[in-house]
Image (cartoon, rainbow, N blue to C red; front, side, top):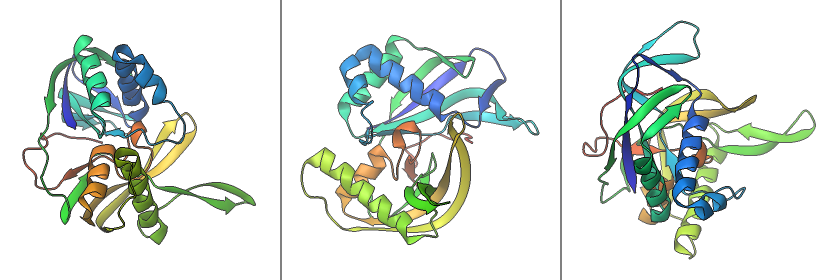
Length: 252
């Protein structure tokens, strides 16, 4: 289930910090808690895929100021939300509609429209474009201690861990042995460094890639995100060229 959320700003121009995913995550959790407190509590369980993801915050128009940690948005702001679990969608969207006034990073907005989006019938063989970058990590010994290491598309383990992550999501969703059929070919990659928490950084990748394989695995990534840390705003994709899916706009 995928949705476009369009917001009308109280003032123009309005600031959008480059590192803003944690603010959107907070909005999502608050609105879910408003409607379904038990679900919200369960989503805080550590090291379990949350089965939802969201895009970066986008605007109809934007301007940049040199050496500022934000851009200036004009017109409507919007972002996209996706989940493989109807209960999560119902709670979040219901919470937004119950309380459409939104404050993000000190700016005030009103939810103007929530639109359910159409989806392609077939995903295998399609070209995908990230709407929030893909994060993939592993553990490696650095300076004598095991530390978190951000993988890149130039490393084979990047693809291995994406596949295993999809298989884990498949098991949670279907309760059966996950299929093996999955291939991913990156066509274009651009790294970006995000501050996900104060002092904690993540290198993630804006990608254009082609994927083929089992439709169930691909659908798990399409709905819940490719890679890791989806619930803090990584790994949302769209199908390139699927015109009914997304509106035009400028993201980060």
